[in-house]
Image (cartoon, rainbow over all chains, first blue to last red; front, side, top):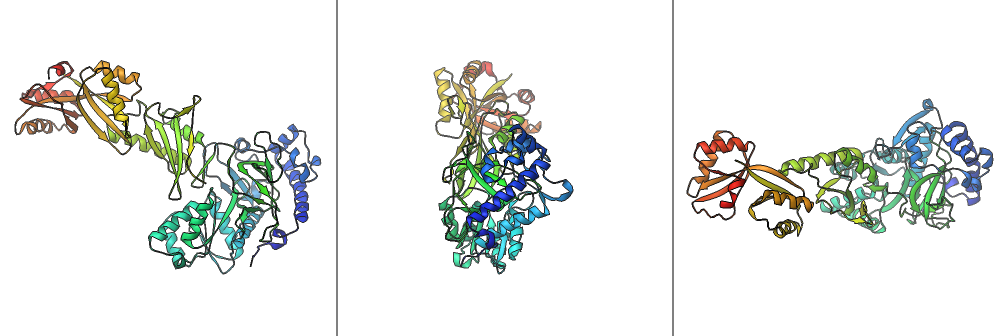
Length: 433
Length: 144
């Protein structure tokens, strides 16, 4: 039987949800106008005032926010509450110039955790469950978000954080964890490892998994479900909006319900900014309706996606978003971490290498690999294998510190990196997602 | 007294070494000695050529990554204990041999020729000369 964390809203009639959105949007626009000078200026430039926004039908009048705005306004420029009312920050994995710092009041955290709790309950979680949170804890939103959600549901929460696979498996086995929260690639890796240890799905106590923070395919879902003997649910979110739990999958496993009482989703044409009708592929844009400390209006996610509102067999009435099918910018999500080619370029240039490089991303055994091919230069070269390898390792260390994930540097001969129309092809993504 | 070696970067991939030999062949540059240090991804090809200047200009032209290193070329009496005598002199001066390889062919049947890479090639040359061991340089390569 389908369970809900907050059935009164999750299964509310669509008209009621829309009315709530209208009401909350008007209030939120007023809040932003009064408290966020950065956005107010953008509204003034567009000739829009809060009086022009009577409901969601007027949304198109509001200016967009992009990651660039977040960078310009870093760190305090988009806050809607004074610092003394904020109790936490979370931050995206990207670094230098691209880092996003989001602020939370206690109320914001409370609502965020509600959203995560909805996802856990939709995956079958109850207070009888042991929920192992293997997302990273810390600045990354994955660990703290699901941790809070798990508490709200009343699960016994096992905050293992990411890494240390041996210990993860020990806890799953010894504490009989029934729900696993982590990135899908880590879930696949745990599954493979347990399989190699000779554990069959019926010897693994897990029954459900909530996996997000990176793209994964339907094939990968089947793999994970088969090796771990679980049902695997997708979850979506962005630090900019709160974290995981912006949308979540239900028992239908066919798209993620957006928590529409807290977020309005729109699909736009990434080139013109024009709002596209439901069912059309385009860039996903979110407006947070209830965030106090970091209230973003019309934030462009750069995720390419489709929205559909159909009657769902789970009983929820929230609109559904498909798995994002790509990006409208050059951001890569590798092992759950946001990576921009420009970051890699910055490391190469700072270390004296030519900006002539190619990024090759692949997925080997369900885990992402990142190779950075760099054209050899006379300065990098030496008549000594050890010396060349030392320089290679130094570059790898630089990339790791910039990106937060490891990258392999592959030295190639000059002029071998493929160019098309005189412009180098910077990214080759071989992952089949 | 100095012998110059060219070290060339090659990717560890089919056909990459041949690109180098092709460039040298087309320009009629003869390799007198060669060794290859390899890793799983790349290699360093070390060569002694008959015409250093010509080889360097060809490599530059063809966008190879290379470096020129001073090495030690030693004429070793082709008899038991020949190499041991050379190494004995070097170790006596605490000169570490980082790598070494053999010279190709040679018109002189009484000697084997070997290339050594040591930190202080000039010091090594004078130490070996004091012991009556002959070293070769770019100038007398053609006679060997």
